[in-house]
Image (tube, rainbow, N blue to C red):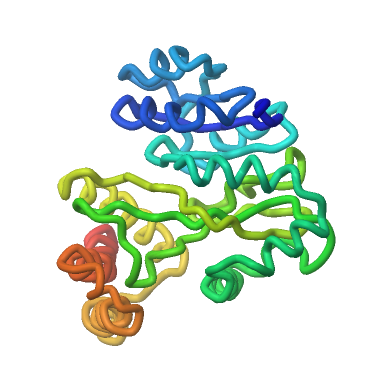
Amino acid sequence: MDKIKLSVVLATRNEEEHLGECLTTVGKLANEIIVVDEHSSDKTIDIAKSFGAKVLLEPHHAIFHITKQKAIDKARGDWILLLDADERVTEKLEEEIKKVVKLNQKELDRYESNLSDKRLFDRHTKIIEARDGKVGKSAGEYVAFFLPRSNYFLGRYLRYGGVYPDGVIRLFKRGKAYLPCKDVHEQMAVDGRVGWLASPLLHVPDRSFKRYLKRNSRYINLMVGEMKEQRVKSSLLFFLSYMVILPVRWFFLTLVRHKGILDSWQGIVFSFFSALRFPRAYIRYISTK
């Protein structure tokens, strides 16, 4: 099968541990690979070039989406697949992408209606829109797709605990989607209808617990920044909320209601440390006041 007109784009910064494995999984899919790198000090750039990627340099930005948008802007394919270096495209996902981008709108309507996990995906879309606002348009042409992301944690891909499908808009028509670049957790702004693909995108951020804690600490720092903007008070009410109520609620919500316990001990550990972000963020916030 001839290659579709698709650009794979990435933003990178010191990703020599992951980048090679990522690019290996898209070699048969991409017409071009664009890597915008924030002046990595390791072998990231050399690895990208070894896969034939076009590499451009960009200063480091606190909001990494700025660099991601730079990569999107450089793409010339009809469709764009945005990836992180610690993500992997399976053969099943590759074939689904090749199929979906060639379907007409009536065929896409049928395809979306027949997704095996449609109810799960619809529920996840509602959760995202309750948090971030309406995503795309309710009717018209499909121009972008959520990819269900399967997250690897301490030797296991998590399926429960509210972790899956972890939908991320990563496949879209050129010129039809962009990152507002206001927040690290923001959704893409899409000028058109957004669907779902069925095959998971594999996410391998944490091969060791040490790396997980380091990455988790960065997210806690972002929470602290949000708390500063909201001017969270150091009162007894906020103390009890962040130190007791929120973590306990989150732990049992993810472990019991969302069945995180079915992911074995990894699910329990993930729920526990996910819940700990609330007291850890509050302690850091208070210490900076």
